[in-house]
Image (cartoon, rainbow, N blue to C red; front, top):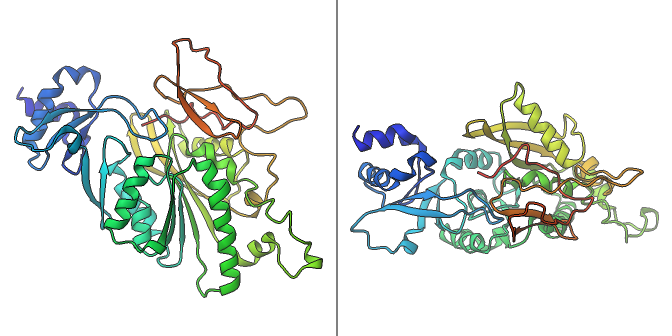
Length: 396
């Protein structure tokens, strides 16, 4: 069989992704011995591509990047291997630049990015992007004149996010960028911004009230951050004078009067075959959230795409209402305190390669190298540990 036909039949022309001048593929083990021939075949059939890269392993770190290898490169390419990794991509009328070896980018999510942007009420809405990456949600949202608060843990993503905001001529007053763990971002920056938004709406009384959109596009781990929304605003009035002795309204009063929509878009993976997959997704979300969601709170469960055989990506839209944001903080996550000692969830690897997952004393997820081959390595666990999701989720 001609090699071009063999390559096409082995993984199909639709099974690779174009990222600027790169062709990105995930070769199966049985094809690795032919990787260079396959790479050359793809270059012959894609005249605009300068090189073909293969993913060596799974996304196995908190920064969502993965090891890649160049399996084919045009002989006349003037770029070094390191320079080749810097790509330019056009998506949703925006121009993006990124180092593909150091940040996460998935061109197959272009349609989903479009769907979310289409939900925004331009020039009025506010977007909190907890796992912003290089900006596939944040940049077009800010370009559409929404106020954007973008966060990512990866310093390299933050670098390119800033560059992409500038490349797309986004006014500096339309966005703020943070480099924090999502838990800290929710409990500090986002919490304060919500209070500021309430004050502004209370004072200005705009004709069109803003809607608040909270994006959580880290499918393998996003559900584990949901507990931090429970009771987020429960303690903000603790130091205020009682309403009877002060003209100042409590945050809860303002929240009720303004009736602003707060919607979380939480992405997750579902592995396996089920008669009712959406029921399984809802169960996983509720287990992580530590609460049953009402029909009003659970807005939508939407299948984004099939990632692999028996593995799908979903978007779960959740309305944050008074019952969630002002709930007691004791009942958060899958671990609820009981009359006896709480039973901690056993430590899991969540699909990470040679990594263990643990919690620091604030409950923040941290990843560290397993220093030995002994799987009994001690892992610190506390009763507020994020929910175990390995049965449902896996890294792409």
